[in-house]
Image 1: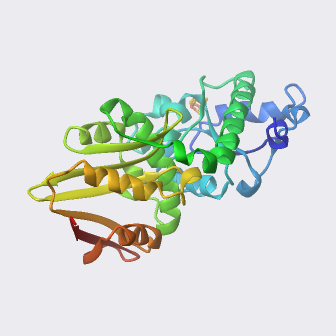
Image 2: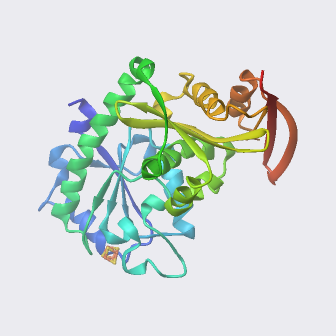
Length: 300
Ligand code: SF4
């Protein structure tokens, strides 16, 4: 294992815990459990952290802080949800001010059960997350070598959970570009995505059985509408987004015209569609800082 998996640095955030789980997490650092003897350091700086430990359910106030911490952590990184509240909202799930577990905001790698989660279980969760950290490190290193093996296939409804996870991971980059954590892609639920499969066609990019990219589209009359181009951050800048758009265009052989949209200031999205021959034809304000840009092209 690489050095950082032998000496992982963690950052802990209390999303809205009753403090039960927090006390147990702190117990991990006391002499009885003493995770520091295993090289684990508790840091207050997200830029130094490899593992993000979150306790408590997510509410409107903690949502932004969670995303902010997560976005500042360098890749590769893993998220451990400690306790049932962080896993699903727990006993507070139906409360008016709770939006759910941590995975309603960012992708979670390990769920530690319990109310409160016992220190042994939290240590176990951290150890388990080291495997995920190492796996991600290998994937990052192998990404440039693997892109030639990418398969572009029609996605099925059963792929929805994996695509949603990817959408939330890739969406963190978009959130940074737009400086907005409330983008529609980040808010979509599994039920909404599953129902999209009833009316939209999905293409997935797959490497070694894992979905690393996706796009969706539908046709009305002569026009095919292309949207939701997502590529895992490790695989960006390898032309996978371009191939996905080309593949979804092929899925609508009778379309004479294609339409898509992206937002300003997402210059990368505009460049991608521009390279594929799309031209801007109208804009829509979304927020004072974000403008949706609609682009179109005729089939050649
Ligand atoms: S899981 Fe239990 S102990 Fe932990 S924050 Fe929720 S209610 Fe408190």
